[in-house]
Length: 81
Image 1: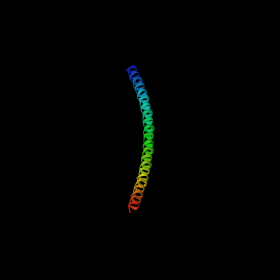
Image 2 (image 1 turned 30 degrees about the vertical axis):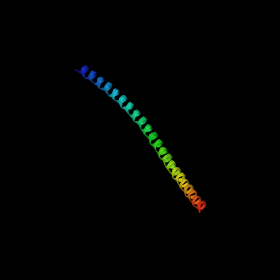
Image 3 (image 1 turned 60 degrees about the vertical axis):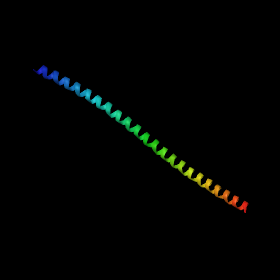
Image 4 (image 1 turned 90 degrees about the vertical axis):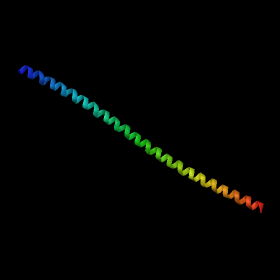
């Protein structure tokens, strides 16, 4: 009976060791996922900033085109008169 208890205890210790190893693997994978999530968040922020700059640039180009069109119309009207 004592030998059986010792064998069961040894099995429990081995099982606990396996569980600890698996949990260690899970913790490492979670850390890797956290790093990847941080990289995605950083890339998203950079992309958002770039889109904002593009939107601003397109707005400025539109203003220049509108100004040029207005000047062109003004010169055309002035030339006809």
